[in-house]
Length: 337
Image 1: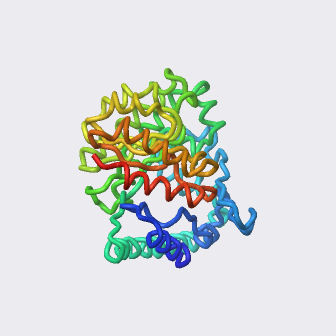
Image 2: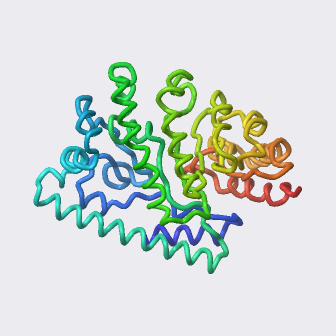
Image 3: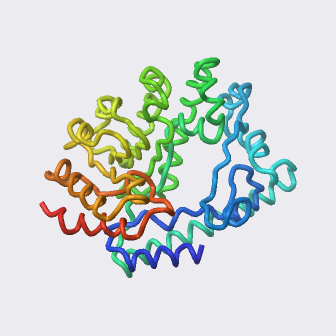
């Protein structure tokens, strides 16, 4: 973590950004080793040294687990889910020890991140751009419980149980968002939306399985004063009218491949909009292409405010330094209105 924070410090010293999300995305090997996590591969161990970590998806929740999960999610997670997902939880005695070690490691990690955030604000003048995170209930089910194959089958084979399980997750996901934010209501909460884009789900599936519980979570957070960074990965163009139903100012709508003009037309004035500089361009394009794209964005969507220049997705290791600089410099120089 010390090296991770040092790298982030170096970035802040070298690049003229105006806010910071946090240290580079790094999942701590020691914490996962303490619990025997099965769901992740690390660079320099299972992967080549210069690769990013890889998430190993599996159906740790089986098709016949729904009744137990719905009846008592906490009991099911402790007695069934964690032993399947973590080797150290298979033995009850070792499970207690690994839980203590993992919790202590997470607490230490979080403490270091908080101290780093204070330092960035004090020494570099960079405020954090967000606090906390949570998910759409569909993504909670599909990412880490049933997995992609499982949740696709469940929509057809046992839709009522899937819907009931997602309803159970609504209050949990609201609580988790506020807890990870430390109760802060000043900054937005990060919500990566993994599987709600088109055509990952067709409109009928989206209306039935994805949107109702996602809307409840966002509205529940907003009732507590917490705005959501609606990180719309992929194309959400067909769903913009539905998203416009959310309370004014309750989200920041982040654009990946959604039609930016339509997003501005339908959501602009009600929600701040961010993103849309393609990651492929940042990785494989030229500085001139990046500059032209950023100017186009500013001309089309930023004239009356309410726009945050950002990459379309989380910037990866293959982004070129000169392209990142081109995005920042063009925004500074051209984005005056």
